[in-house]
Image (tube, rainbow over all chains, first blue to last red; front, side):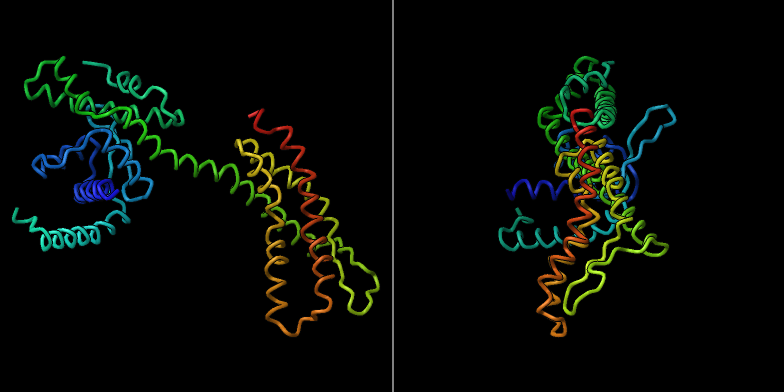
Length: 110
Length: 224
């Protein structure tokens, strides 16, 4: 129960964070997350797209089809106002959680 | 290069989504796999191995299908609820209220019973001109809901929606008034309740259903 909630929370924070600065398509979102976490977080299709669709339904992100100069149609996701608003408290919550875990189990020094 | 759309279509065969949705999902996932495949090629992997790797990196397809269905289906359910119930219900209530306002303003006058009310006798005010139009409004509500594939409960709700405010008044408003307002004549409340309930809830509901139910049976789910 907690495991899936934590996973979902992590994925949500990761997606919102990479979309904060620019709109990206699904593959690029997964690549950025993997790159910026140095491979610690990896998204398969099964993890990424259902999450994106759910976040779109919650109006945290908005996906629009765009055609690139080479003619490929891609669905680009951008943060909505609600998504941007959610990011700050979400970061704070995770910071609190890490601080609490650190006090409890010394996770940052492990 | 593999036909990634075909690959995705095969893996998601039998996915329970609307046709447009399936097309969008297939296109989006195919683009993702193509990007993964190209990236593998750039890293010097041979074509066949690059395609294999792209498929392996995509994860469990059965899980993907299930998760996509659950993440998109709620949206479908919402759309269905709107088209099968909320839209027809609001059309019927809007038309019913508009007609009642028009009849109250320009006539004909309502039938008032009894003509010479005795002291303490509740009076029924019935707008027959309005009642006569209600079967058509009920029929429209039933047709809109049935056409959208509404289940009997949604169709029934759409038909009788215009009487709900009156039902709310008689079931909640009047009892609360009796309890809170000591100036209301308590001894006429029960007869008044039945007279008012019949004139503003029962009679309009029967009229709405008289038009709505035949339409529902004619254009119901079996024909959609």
